[in-house]
Length: 113
Image 1 (cartoon, rainbow, N blue to C red):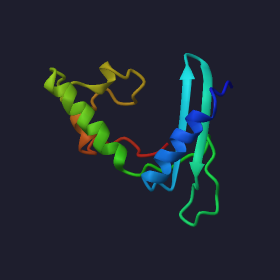
Image 2 (image 1 turned 90 degrees about the vertical axis):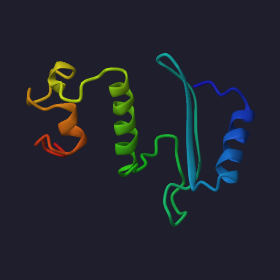
Image 3 (image 1 turned 135 degrees about the horizontal axis):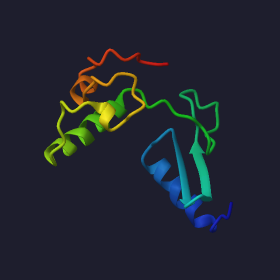
């Protein structure tokens, strides 16, 4: 991994501190080649675990909002909410599940495998 100097570290650390974030993980990658990765701050609420570039963070339910928003942008572009998802994701276990089913948690699919 090639580090391009201390300016990336200083910039990221400034953002983390000024934004009052408990931690910040940043990575820069060229296709197939990591260039730089660093973490700043602590990975837990107690401040006892240092954040690392490979720290896994819980994102909780916030991804639902982003996913639903992205899907609704696709609907604005003509995507049909009632189209079977298996047409897009052929490995999905049921061919009758639609995007609408997924958005309203009515698909009947197991939550976690």
